[in-house]
Image (cartoon, rainbow, N blue to C red; front, side, top):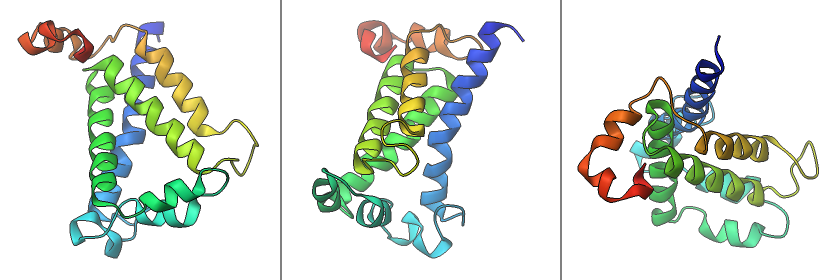
Length: 158
């Protein structure tokens, strides 16, 4: 497989790492989110993690955000839009940098990580996203996306 194809697969897989938890939390598919905890049933997609998994120097800040409706919406929209952007190769830089920021926040919430005091999957995935932000997007809808008037007038949307 050519280098471009490998990066396209990596981009799509990274997109799926954001899109899958969106669907799991939305519908309660029974993987990380039990069916009775679905967001569609009125449950908070952030409450469990921010209440139970946070630790370290920033835990009080993150625990205070747990269950907040605005935080829930921002988190879920972030998962959805980052996932779609990466999978389809649109809004590449915005998707990649937003994804890296979300991963950094999740890393800060569990600082220090369980398996390694510094580096964990959140940091690795964030670095991958920063690399992808600066690569071309073969096998994507990026040419179509870039041709849209709103994107041509707002380069940050590329």
